[in-house]
Length: 232
Image (cartoon, rainbow, N blue to C red; front, side, top):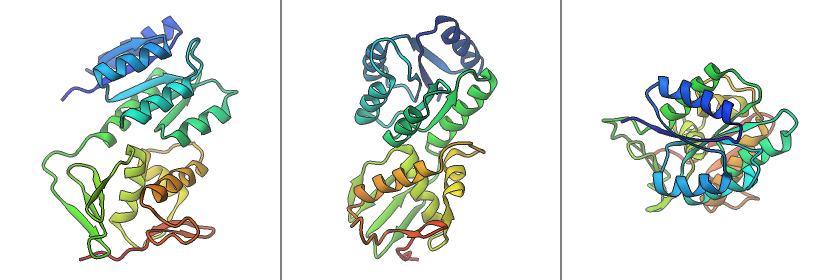
């Protein structure tokens, strides 16, 4: 199935350049220079991925990201200026999946888009389930879903990637760097501390006691591990 990408970029030349490169890969491409219009288009067209410039002239890019991620599990790749480090971090903490700093290579952009789309796509023909803690947690790998005591937990693609990586080898400690690469699928010079924010969100969704987590354990100075035992 062909994926749809929504470009949200107010620089017309850059927007058209990105469109050209993505269409060469056979992707369906929508585009706008307005944050308000982006929210509307996303609601009606349901793109698989949004390329989002954070420096939009009408609605701040972070507000657009917040609204998109509040109402859907769309993949978000942020386009940012070099000086907006805090905006990048805030966007990643909101649940955005990746970022590129301007100026960037269109080829690198395409590679990142394709990598994100591969990661977000449910593998055909897969029906494996992983169960932990006497069925307290069940991973449905076909649907990319997690059940907590029989109830569906809504996870972003990044959150799913983190906890699924931990679940594939329960008890193994993953460093933040390893989790970044497990989730991204390629070397990513990002902010490993953003993994901490995603883990915090995961613990909240799993109804963990922040002072005494029993599912995702912190190993001081190293990283994280899944501490529930598999049902076999």
